Image 1: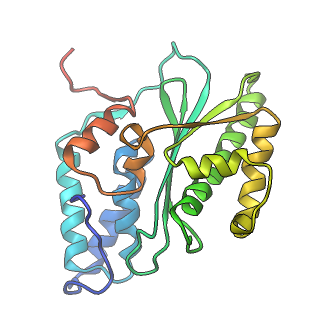
Image 2 (image 1 turned 135 degrees about the vertical axis):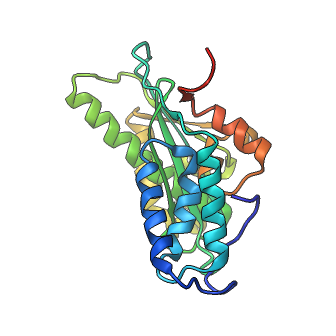
Length: 243
């Protein structure tokens, strides 16, 4: 998507044939199973399927052009991999121009291979960027815990904690602080979710500068240079690339 593009349900003319837009977005949603790099764009475009407009179709066409330029990309699940879980989570505070809800995004790696990713608008309005980031941490924590249970069922036990990377120091401080303050009562449930995992030794939080935060690719429309740099960290494989 174009950098800092903010689509809404007001600007632009309605499409004469909205069914074509809906079929296109449906196919793109299916493609996100193996293409995490398009997840954020598809998430935004799928929010306007009830009344698609010209700007929405223009953005969808731009995405199709990007896909046609990289048809062989996908995920490599290497057989020589360290079975260690780590996650990158991020949020874009008040990013929705219509509801002012924040966007949560995360990606979970098993060794060097991405195995789970998600982009979703938060169900409530966050009153600060720290609150939005902490809600993203809570969602990623639940995903990590579920994957640990799944690996345990497959006979793979983790004696070491999973690492959760976040680029907001205030959110990390809230997770580490056992004292509940007045300012954190509205996110008390999420506080318990993350802190319990930290206390039982299954989770470790770590700060990561925004420049290296892979989660950014799931929460906002980035410039070409930043997008390609973060995309390279997803370890996608292009089968058409020269060896």
